[in-house]
Amino acid sequence: MKNHLLYRILACYVALILFTAIAMGLMYARQIKTELIDGIKNDLIAQARISALLGTGDIERKLSNLADISRSRVTLIDASGRVKADSEKDLAEMESHLNRSEIQEARIKGQGEAIRYSRTLGVDMLYIAFPVTEGSEVKGYIRFARPLFEVRKSIDQQYTYIYKCLLIAIIPSLVIAFLLARKFISPIEKVISYTHKVSGGESLGTLLVEANDDVGQLEKDINRMVVEHRERVRVADQDRAQLEAAFASMTEGVLVINNQDRIEFLNRSLKHVLGNEGIADILDKTPLEAFRNVQLQDALDLFRDSGAPVLREISLGQEAPIILDVTISAVQGLPEGKQKTMMVFHDVTRLKKLEKIREDFVANVTHEIKTPLTAIIGFIETLEDGAINEEATAKRFLHIISENAHRLGRLVDDLLVLSSIELGEMKLRIENVSIADAIDNVLPMFETKAADKSLAIDKKISDKLPFIGADRDKLAQILVNILDNAIKFTPSGGKISIAAFQDEKGYVVVRVMDTGIGIPKMEILRLGERFYRVDKTRSRELGGTGLGLSIVKHLMRAHNGSIDIESQVGKGTTVSLSFPQNRAPIT
Image (cartoon, rainbow, N blue to C red; front, side, top):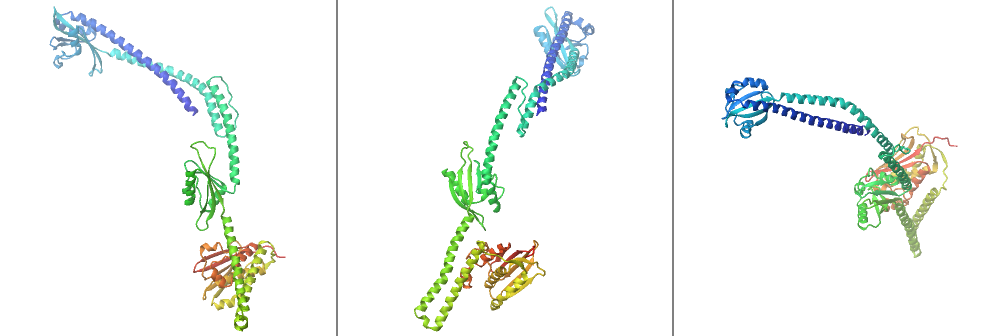
């Protein structure tokens, strides 16, 4: 930038010097040319005027002498334009000269002149013609012609002189121009360097004002502008930092849309929510392009039509949708044409899920308690009405009452276990437990049930599995629940496989696979909720309370383990229980 300015100033100086010198040289050369031609013309006019006083005969005889004396080409032409004599050319090669401009001018005015370019000599020729008279009768014309070699030579010398002067003058002129330009742009270079550093973020002082001229005034103005700019930047940075801190600390997601309907900002909370849904790189996109959500676009269109804040509930995702409360409003305090729209997203998925769980729990626990109580009360009333006197009927009714009472007892026991786990009241007696021994201890409990349904049980347990730290009774309860479900929901003739191994992370994994009815993919996420059943009618018929997997999930968490369920409808279910191996001795 600085060099470009210096070169431009130097170029202006050089152009001015060259233009002045060339203009003066051209004017001087033109003046010299005019004076030289006038001198030659006057000489030829004098020669021609004197020669025209001779007769045509004398001129023809003395033609060579006249040419030598005047140092010119002399031509004698009769009145009809025919060349009678020429000092340089053969008459046979010459045509009529009557129509030559200098001859016509001489015939009319008594003197003619013309300048024409000679292709033969490659130079301009000056022609002077006078009529030759005898008395009052024009007998012919005498013409003197001289090439303007002298003029061209003088002009060439003049141009050479001009070039030499330019060459001599341009070097010191350039030096002077450079020094002047350097002096002129030096304070400008300082200003440019200072402004570049300031714009680059460097913290500098103010410019040193060294002169009271226009450049000095410019430096004062820049100093004032820099001070004002720094203050504005400081205030803007402070406001932006406060705003970003507020946005960053918000649990709600915040998104800002500019007046071009493009997303220009989103905070960390919203990035986290969208990242979990696989939505990324949404900056500079429209909301419809970014979210592909019709509910959100409808809410945004309603806000634009009404101008009033809009609150809507939307869901994102397909398999495990998240539910968001979205508030759309205008960003206040912006100038006309710079309006922006703010969207605030509040994740209410967990709240909605808890509401659903609570509703299901209330409905389920009411139903689970009411069903056996209704049966018990109904059969008791029947017995009281006289059925007790019928021994066979009374025994059947009492058996049904007993089953429903035991069902209520199991339900209360399971609820007490869950409550004890969740309240932290359950104490685990951790000891070194062999997972192979634990499996062998519970399998005999299911041999009869498996045989009744002709189920094949396959067991594959790796050798030398490490001990796990577990409560032996609670581990047995976990295994009983998983194996009981596998046998319940596997049709007759099916197969149950039990495997135990150590995975690459060092966890001891117990995997129970069955060929049962399977579980729909959308239902797997809800397994472990209290009273949740995939097939409610079938589960009750098989005697389940709907709390087994919920207890297993809590007990696995208490053992620092995890449960993973994979299933396909009609093909079966695989339940994997992962226990950390015991690395510390049990005392």
